[in-house]
Amino acid sequence: MALEEFDKSLAIYRGSGDRTGEALIHGHIGNVWKNKGDRPKALEHLHASLAISRGIDSPDEISTALYKLGHYHEDVGEFDSALAHYEECLAVEQRTLDKESGSVHPI
Image (cartoon, rainbow, N blue to C red; front, side, top):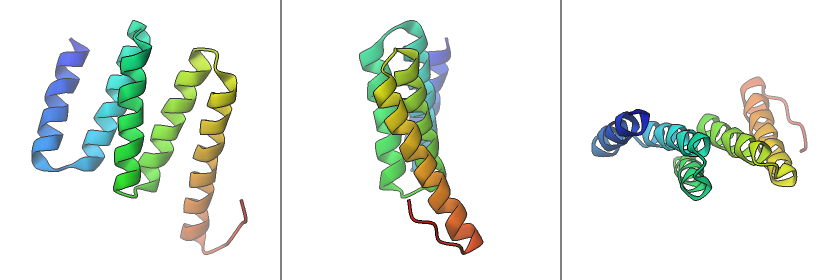
């Protein structure tokens, strides 16, 4: 049921050219596949979310996609990969905060 609704939403976002919405839905679909135990499909959608987010250069979406990938790897016991994604997520967030506040912190 959830996958069917997400697939409908994905088609709507694609049809309207809303890449941010498309990235968001790929992340949700990835989480559903993870919860269903289909790791390849989960990773396919989680990586699609990250690729789209990077393609539109949206720090908020990049950060969210990295966090979801980190969470996925943590859940399946791949702690080094989880940590790498969490650290990259943190770096993106820090750069965003620095731009907003005007301060510069080397990371």
